[in-house]
Length: 86
Image (tube, rainbow, N blue to C red; front, side):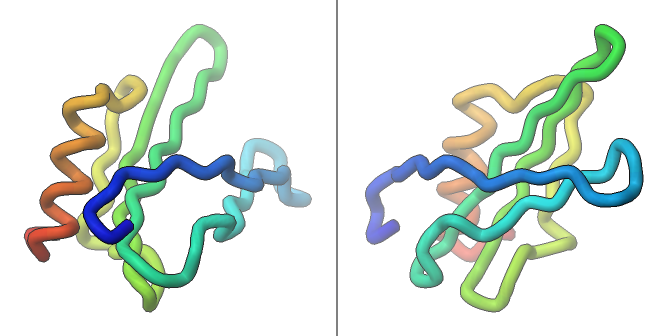
């Protein structure tokens, strides 16, 4: 936000459907954010980088991974978002 990286904890809760979770916006409404999601099940890992704007998440710019995102991937996603490349 304003050229400075911030991290905020996410509020995640299970839905009525098994294996489906909701992520609530706990980050400020202003600024552009990248939500870094990571999960594991039965020994498998996955991740996703979800760029957001003031209007919500940017569906076409979501990056799905077969592992948690690296710090470099997170930084790149943040830079691309700040430059309007997402």
